[in-house]
Image 1: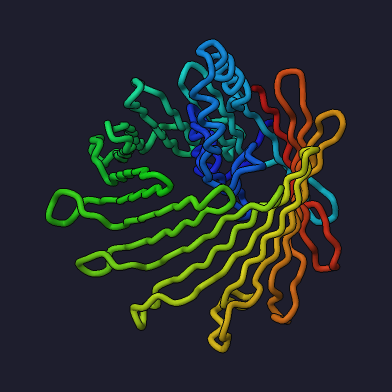
Image 2: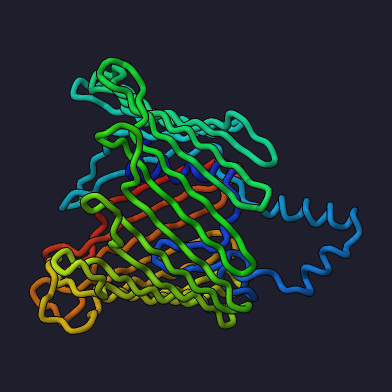
Length: 407
C-alpha cells in the first residue's frame, strides 16, 4: 500500500505550488542557504550582466526564438504523478506500514491530491482531498481556485475550505496577489475567514514586497492581524541584502514583533547566507537579538554539493531560554552532502548535530537522513531512510520511504 511521506499541508501545498510555478528570484534551500539555480557566476538575486542583456536585445528574432525554446526545455516541469509508501521500523527491526495513502496527480492545469485512510474496520476511505485549478489566465492576470474537502472516519464529507487566488500585473510592473479563504459553516454557508494580499514592486535593484493578512473583526468587515514587509537589494553581481519586518496585532494596533536581516553573497562556486533575527520581548516591548544563522553552500561542476549551516541562539538543550547567556550560542549544525553517480543517481545525506540536554556545552548527534534518487524510464524513484540514535548510542533506521515519481 502506498503511504504518506509528508505532512498533509506541507506536502500538498508544496506540490500544488509547483504547478504553473515561475522560477524564483532567489532560492531558499531547506537548510537556510540562498542561491540562484544555474547561476554560478551570479549572486543571489543579481541581474544578468549588462553585456549579456545587450547581446540578447541585439540577437536576431529567429535566434531569440531558439533561445526561448531552449530555456523552456531546460525548465523542470513538476511531476504529473507522485506515489509513495512508508514503513516504520520498530525497535528490534520489526516493521509496520502507516495507515494513510497519498496520491498527487496533475493534468491540464489541475492538480489534485487525495489522502485516504484505513479506518478501524479495515476499510479504505477518503480523509482529505485538495484540488487546485486554474480558472482563467491572461498575460496580465490569473485566477486559481483551491478546494480542500475533509471527511470523517467513515468517509463522509464534513467541512470544506475554498481559497480563491487572483494575481494581477499592473501597468507599472507591480504584481498584486490576493488570496481569500472561505470556510464552510455549520449551516452549510461559505464565509470568508481570511484574506491575504501581497504587493510586489520592483524599482531597479530594489524589490519591495508587502503582505497583509486580514481577518473578520468584531465590528464587521476585515482588519489586519499580520503584516510582513520585505526589501531585497541587489548589490553588484556577487551580493544581495534582504530585510524582513513582521508585525502582528497587539491590542488595538500593529506592533513589530520580529525583524530578519540577511546578507547573501557568492564567491566562485560558494554561496554564503548570514541571517540575524531580532524578536520582540513581551516584557519590554523592545526588539532584541534572538538568533543567528550562517550557511555556506558549494556547488561543483559535476553536480555534487556540500553545505553547512550553523544556528546560534539563546536556548538550552531542553528548549528553555538561557537567561545567563550574553551572546548567541551554537544550537545546531546541519551538514548536507550531495553526490551524483555516473548513471545519474543522486545521493543526498543530511546529518544534524544539536545542543545536548544534560551537557549543554557539547553537541550531540541528531537524526540523519539519506535520500537516493534514481532515474527511471518515465521519471525517477526516491528512497529515503531516516536514522536516529537509540538508547544504546547506535544510529538505527526508524523510517524508510519509497516514492515513485512520473514526470
